[in-house]
Length: 139
Image (cartoon, rainbow, N blue to C red; front, top):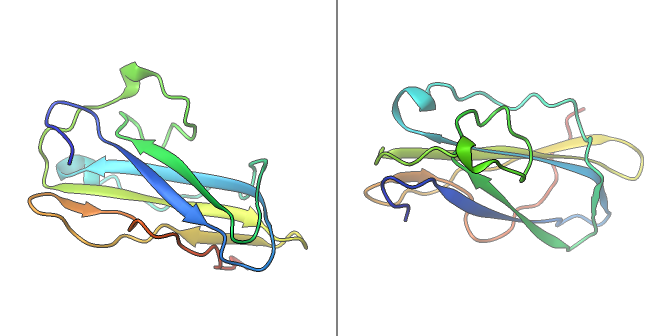
């Protein structure tokens, strides 16, 4: 559970459940905290799979997300501490994002991070601890 007055950070685990590698893996992850900030929610609209990572079949990785002043301006794990925003006790905390990658033929795919569950007294919409397949085709 986050502590009031401190930034929120989460680890996001994911796994390639497919039979082939995911190339040029690009991750987008965001945290919005209740009230007016949650009204800023919008789906990612990245240019596609621009990363350099390769995720082999059955391979797992993780990334982190943190509460930032402008969650859409930062697409890196290299975060300046002055950009962190403390949690003010809002009930709703939305954790969301997407995975973009190419298959061996160059087809672009996207998987959205699902939002699941709620923990009282905070409504955390986040990934469960299990991994999620990278399977949705954007064509």
